[in-house]
Length: 354
Ligand code: ADP
Ligand code: MG
Image: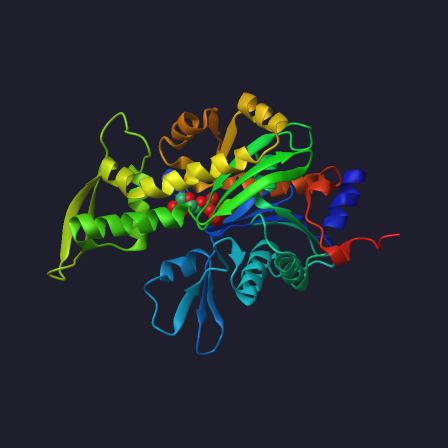
């Protein structure tokens, strides 16, 4: 009886949706289905007409290969919303992907993750962009909070939790307790910076020029922050800086370690800084429970061990670290009442003060 009624209602009411608007990847969770979209956060725009040509994977494939008047734009750069219109296009595309052409009478309720420390104006803009595209209700949550929920940390308890999210454009270090972010720091040292480090190291050491995609491939296939049990190497092709001709070289794990070591030091320092200003009770919880690594950068070989060595607390790499925020947005959706207090409220959405 109840199921029949529910099926009938489903014809008119959209499924709730969770969105992780990452600097590198965007994920969409649909209630009852799980994660259904996982695409690069890239929008290709025709500068002559202002029209959007492609979004997601299609747009990323265009990066570096487009004619001059088509530019691939990332809606989020360095953890801030760089272009509101492009962000809105990205959200419009995602909702279309999920909803298809069958717009329902009642649009979805949407939970959106945004980089930690976004301004009120930015979270407002994300909220409006989502509403303008047919959402019935919009809830905004900071990404480290969503990630912590996604990996099932007890965020509402009086216990300190440490999250280190190493994404594409930014890394976020956050201490969470009692449903709130107690201390946090966002830095621009993350996956993209490591790619740049590799490009410039190879330019200096091997005198060849490689592209961003090649650098990212090297990082993923042979990147590490501690010596690996077996040596790893990759053969790469680039343009010789002197002859201008293509040339192939062999790069090893130790080359990559050297290339990225400066950035990794900055990351470690940032975790230290956050812990240094965290209240002692919470630090003691974190010492007992350890820190948690999420985001694509959590997959760099040895990052957990290296952090443990320098910070003197254990670190765990979350299962499927790239989807932690998306899963968290989904968990929040499934129980909005329970997670009400962890969401960002815009001032003008709050009931008037008495
Ligand atoms: P964001 O949340 O900012 O969109 P993600 O959490 O999706 O970022 O992580 C994307 C970053 O993770 C990219 O810089 C990518 O190169 C990097 N990455 C993905 N897989 C790996 C891997 N196995 N090793 C190292 N870095 C990785
Ligand atoms: Mg992220």
